[in-house]
Length: 262
Image (tube, rainbow, N blue to C red; front, side, top):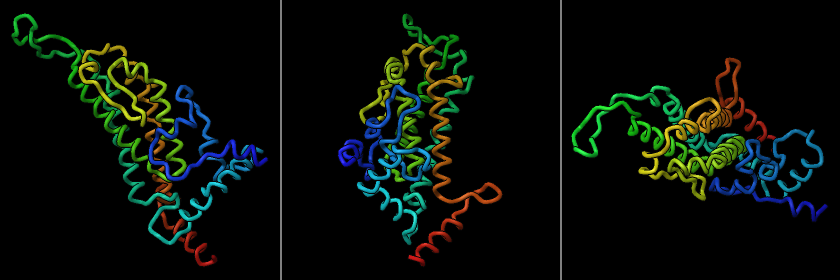
């Protein structure tokens, strides 16, 4: 029993970079296994022996203690362990990423337009019908910047649901890394995106459309996970009321009650 637990034990405290998550999720699998990363902290009891090992590992590496402190400590932090300020920032970065995807998926961005170009032979300015490469490149750059900010912020998070969504999001980008590289976008060791502008501007328009348009595209899947991160940050920052809005009143009352009893 002890030997088995040592083999499955993984430390989850003090994660600062999303690149650590690649140990727990196959970037080519759209449904990675998070059990090694998260154990069964907060999970159901129906998971069987796997949960027992996960619980044991969580106790050994101190993550239960970390969660308890986050839930019940008398300080201005949310029940997730992240401060309200950090959760608000995370939510804002996720909203920015989602908006950048909406811009990329706007059909008008991918329509040919009458644009002015310089004739390569004469140097004269002529009007041609072509894709607005400058507008497309700007939209892709905004997406990459928003994605990088969210990856960095979620890598600092102590909220399990946010981390889980971030793992899936970076895994999806990793699964598209070959096509991304083809259009001038490199996935770095820290799962951030770097753009080669010249390569991006000359990339095959169909490859760009595959990545950034359509309901099943990489961009659409990233937007979905950004939306989940928005919801996770909002949940962690409070509780649902009868009207469906968020409030941290009930969480605070429960925390105060536990503090008094302890």
